[in-house]
Amino acid sequence: MKKIFYKMVCLICIMIMIIVLMIHGFRSFSKTQVKSFDLVTNKEIPISKISGFYVDSDENFYVGIDDFSWIEIFDKNGKFVCSIAMKGLVYNFYVDKDGLLHIFCTYRTSDNIYEQIIDIEKNSIISEEVIKDEPAVNMNPKREIFINNKLYSIDKNVVKIKSKNYEKEIKLDIEIKYSEDLLLN
Image (cartoon, rainbow, N blue to C red; front, side):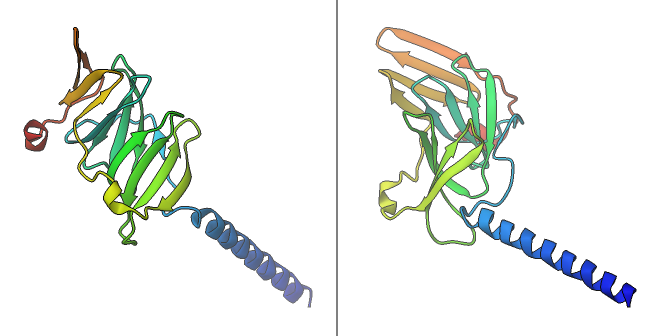
């Protein structure tokens, strides 16, 4: 009788643990389409194809690589800061005045386009909403941007900065994995 009681208690404990884990999983996964993974990492990804380019107000460089599988961030001197792993198909991105990264993406499991807002310092997606006005999203990111009265452009791993009486080139601290796509883009 004692063995049966012990087995029943163990079985109930295991069932409670499974239920608690399932509830926790549903609560944390229901907030975003992106499942658990390291969002911001110090992993340097060699550039093989540049998908997009952005410069924030502090002149940090954001480079979308390999069809936006990653977004890499470099400081204004070209030193690597971090990489951000993307789990969806990214169309474009920008950084707002508060330093939050806005990503426009979709997932294989959905027909919607989402705007994710990522707090890079906290390594978290702070919001994700379906875009209601899809035509407003620029689906063709460029490799140049005009900000702070300067034109920034990227070619391979070199950022070129031009203004009226100013011209500078900054080499990004990253390995180049040469491919035809990189050379043609």
